[in-house]
Amino acid sequence: MLVGAMNTTRSGRPALTRPDGTPLRVLVVDDDPDLAEVLTGALRYEGWEVRAAGDGAGALAAARELLPDAVVLDVMLPDTDGFAVLRSLHQVKPDVCVLFLTARDAVEDRIAGITAGGDDYVTKPFSLEEVVARLRGLLRRAGMARQQEDGPRLTVGDLTMDEEAREVTRAGELIELSPTEFELLRFLMRNPRRVLSKAQILDRVWSYDFGGRAHVVELYISYLRKKVDAGREPMIHTVRGAGYVLKPVTK
Amino acid sequence: MLVGAMNTTRSGRPALTRPDGTPLRVLVVDDDPDLAEVLTGALRYEGWEVRAAGDGAGALAAARELLPDAVVLDVMLPDTDGFAVLRSLHQVKPDVCVLFLTARDAVEDRIAGITAGGDDYVTKPFSLEEVVARLRGLLRRAGMARQQEDGPRLTVGDLTMDEEAREVTRAGELIELSPTEFELLRFLMRNPRRVLSKAQILDRVWSYDFGGRAHVVELYISYLRKKVDAGREPMIHTVRGAGYVLKPVTK
DNA sequence: GTCCCGGTTCAGAAGGTGCTCAGAGGTTCG
DNA sequence: CGAACCTCTGAGCACCTTCTGAACCGGGAC
Image (cartoon, rainbow over all chains, first blue to last red; front, side, top):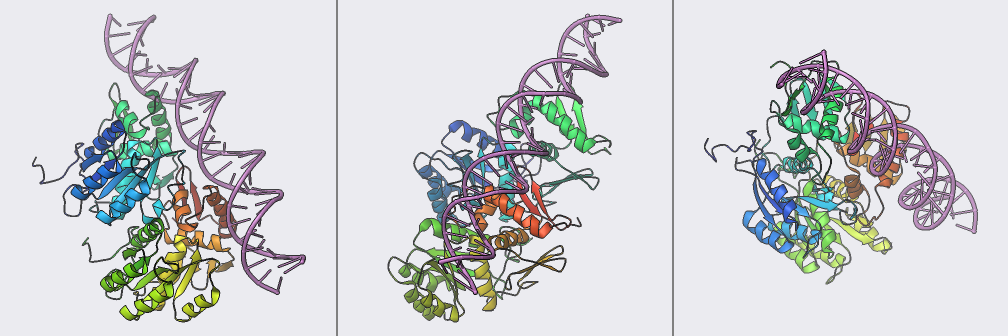
């Protein structure tokens, strides 16, 4: 396949691109190199062009060069305050989207006003699915991402998920999900017909600092089955020794 | 979809535009950079073209370049007095609308003179919903904004809100709301079928200097439910771990 | 058949989230 | 100056969510 002819994710899914078809450009700013690495990897996996910076100064320099569509920005930086960085970033590129990373207890004091401009934030520890989903939402709403087939709605067989309204239906029937169930199903629905290992699921759906065992995944799959497959023809299948697959019923 | 062919807000809603379809142009003048940043972000989110200035001189320079349809103008500026700026602005663009930002205990008679000219003001600390709503009202009344579909009336299901008259009805029945309740409902009604987080609500509906916790949002949602959903089929729904949605009853 | 292993499910503990009530303080208006 | 109203805080409570541990189940190997 020609690189550049069509932009695809490493997972084979069509990537969310800029309106002109080139990859979306994202800047990751975090002073924890491990975390920056994980984030960078996850975003590259989405087929996006990613650069990383460790502090406010580096962020600005990188932004001037990359002119990113979005920035993932840790609020706590060694040299600057997140709000100041936001201001400078907007001077470099007024329409840039920003996703803030913040500690759960460092609380909302510094978050005040941030979501007002359409920007968003997630609290540490977060899951990669969460970060990617928020970023996709931001970029789509800002019109920086080419509208993909179905807009903000995911569909697999007769199963649909509206990410904005957080609504899931199967055969038209509404299904109520807890936050974790929702995120697990979102991950499955974004990778239909593909076997996902428990480790993969754990890495994407659970927060990066989760110490627990893969047993939780089995548990939540069983929860999902009760709600999604309840009585109906099953869509969630176990592949012994490998993981789980979500497939439309009529194969 | 062609970018530029239709002007939309970053939230996906159709934007209020100039009569020729181009984005409305707004100039923000405030010497507090954080506040200016938040205001700028919120107005851009509405799909408008925004520039910011920190003092009277900068404001004039920016106005000459931008020729704004409206100006959000802090009365207290480091170099000049807001009213002097107003006079100069009117020389640059005689039909410009002005929304004054003023301290709560500011002199009333001077403000009274302003509003006689069709301009408006809000007192600090204000909420972003308030500022945006006032600005929309000003621009609409001045005929600088293309009349959108429904004029100043919002409708979701059998729930209607007349922003000008501050009247809310459900199934034809009049509902009395306190100022905060009204603004919260307005925000919900401007974003129907979209889950809004408590942080988002706090950032938009409460004043920017509000230090309180998200608990207030829950409280006011409960007030609103008592009045809007009272006995009827509920329209305000809780999405655990995510926020709240307003939806018409017949899905 | 029996054992082992991966997977499923149940039950319950621990903590978290959201709802409501009661009341204090502030503001507005008569 | 007093009454009415509005806004916000704190506390209590009910329910939900998440995760642990343990029992259970079924397929495949031997």
